[in-house]
Length: 445
Image 1 (cartoon, one colour):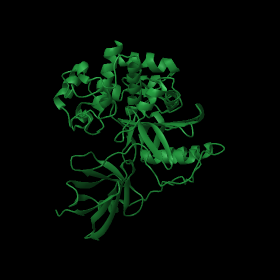
Image 2 (image 1 turned 180 degrees about the horizontal axis):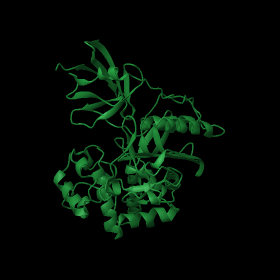
Image 3 (image 1 turned 135 degrees about the horizontal axis):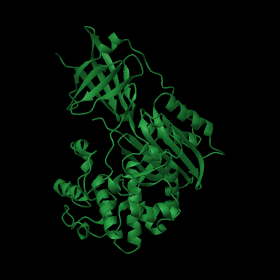
């Protein structure tokens, strides 16, 4: 039930435009407010016409070492890696080494439906290959090393969820396989191909295939908010995500990359036109993100405690890259704030006020609640001076008190409002998420 939503959302259409200048002071104030209220750690970079017009870092790259983030801090960028993979595949297509309609069976005939799945299907998530990161067991082995052979055997065992081209469904599996195809055709590792074909070509100094995080090399660790403090997040073994999510970078490098891409320095215009063509909500390694009346193209990402976004607004010639190694506020709301200020739109910086309960009051919320609308139960517990919620079979999440009876879990857009006190305990609450409302009532002991 609880899902993280990463990326921009379409808002009600209003008129706005990039003004005479960027309000950098307001951007600073917004990011400072996020940092001071433990809502966001990370870095931001904004460019216009290919030139940097704003950058700022807040929070820590490594908490234990008290190492603050700065413009050189390198972050895991998760699925933004898919843009790099897609560009290299299209370069190989331009070189005549494969085609959009080349079958997967040419490279990996033992994979499900390999004789029907095309390179194009893999690129725009129409392959049907089962997305391995959706499996519950993924969380149990994501920190372990796996060989390419082990990954391929798993993909073969997992099968396909639907026939190639039948519909679209996001698949990390497809992009891991595309990374393997790059290695086959270039006769070099993904890391070497990335360096030769992209980073050296356009002068990216802080973008490469990641490994175990090394704080001494300016690489950031990632964190999750546990209600009262930042705690270390898991660290995925980077041999697993490969071409789907193993690249590390900085916001400034990401802006340089996306600006180079849209100025045809990496692939030809005709090729780029195909890459950005949208079918069933998916491009060939890119997404379309609306913001009010504006339209951008780019990608988002999430891995461990990292969340990221890079987007290019063609009409305004604006690029923005945001990478976080810790969020205690909906990442989507961070993006909306940054873009609203960037484009001169009216925007009020949040106050982040919270409500302080007494310990005996918090105990009244504890219990197991169920809803006839959903097939799960939600257990509310007190840990120290915070409440935590936990759905059946899910990880616990902190609930922030914003009023006496109102709690939020910002990262997932969850709002819980309690009601009805009987015998000293709350008996029901209304849960709101994603436009839906669900009534939960306390189960009798």
